[in-house]
Length: 433
Image (cartoon, rainbow, N blue to C red; front, side, top):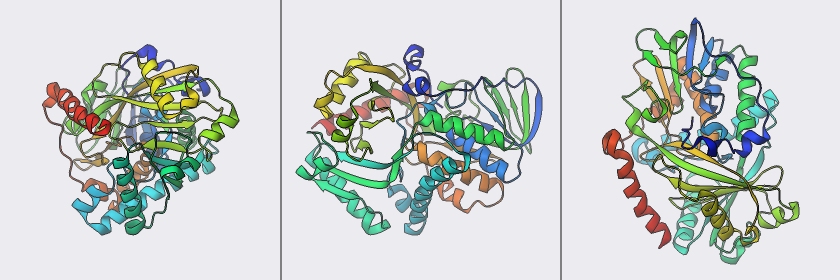
C-alpha cells in the first residue's frame, strides 16, 4: 500500500491512465468466516490469496482503498533479482548456506512472475532486462566489486561494462559503469496487479474494497472489524504497510516501528520516437543507479520515458517536483531535455532499517509481510507463496526471513522521520561528493 501525500498528484498516474479498472468491488457489509483473512489487496496480499486458494483454503481479502491503489499499482515496475539490502544481512546473520537459499528464492521470484503471467493470461507489458548503473568512479568501483562478488559467490552473471563501453548499454554521458542482466525485468504494475486480482477471484477468493480494518482481535481465531462488517478466521496475513500509523488505525503496533514510509515520485513523458528509445537504451531494459538516493527509469510499451526518484523522507511532497524531476531526467539523457511531461505521480513505500524484507509471526496465527524496501515487484509474489506454505505447515522457507533480526527506527513516532532526514542528508552528501 502507499500513502497519498497529495491527492491531486496521485490522480495523475500514468498507470491509472493506461489500465482499465473493473467496477469497484463492494465494501464488506456482513459478518464472515474464513480459513484465512488477508489484509491488503496489493501484490503480496493477492499472491498470498492465490496460493492459499490453490491449497484449498477459503480466503477473504480486505482492502482499505481499491485493489493495488497503493505502491503495488504506482511503483517503477522494475522486477529485480535480489534484495535492496544485498546479501550481507543474510550472510552475517544466517550464514552462507541460508544466504544462498535466500538468493535462490529471489531468483525463483522472477520465475513466479513468468508463471503467473502465463497461468492467468495477464497482459502487463512484461520485458526482460535490467541495468544497474553507476554515476561516479567511486560508485563504479562499488558496482564492479558487487558484480564480481555475485558471480563468485552465487554464480550470478551480469555483463559488466566500464568507461566508454557503457555506451553500448545506455546512451548517457553520466555513467561510469553498467551491469546488465536478463533475469530481472519490468512490467506495468497496475495491469499486473489487476490480473492477480482476477486470478484470485477465479479461484474463489472474496475481495472487498473500501474495507479498512479498524480493529484486530487476537486469539485462537482472529477477528477483524471494518466500518460495516467483520471477518473471523483461523489465520491472518498482514500484507503491506497496514502496521504503520500513517495508514490509519494500527492493527499491529508491536512491529510498526520496524518500517518507515519513504516518498518516491515518477514522471511520464509524452510518447517518444521509437528509434530514439532504442538509441538511448538499446535493450529496452529497466535501469537503476546504485546511489543511496537513487534514480530509476525505463520506457513504457507506448514509448514514454518513465523516470523515478527524488526520494522524500517526510510526509510532504517536494516543491517544484515536475521541474526537478524533468531536470534530473535531462541530466541522465540530454536528448530528452524539453520533453513534454504528461504525468506526475508518487507516494510512499515502506523500508526496513537494513533494507532487508521483514516477514514474521505475531503469536501462532498472524503472519506479516513488510519492509520490501523498493524490491517489492518480485519479492511480494515470493512472500505470498512463502506465507501460504507456512500456514500449510511448511515453514522452512518462510523462516529464512523470519529469523532475520530487525531494528526499530530511532526516535519513536514523533522523531523517527526527523532522524531519518538527517541520516539521508549524510548519504546525499556522500553521493554528491
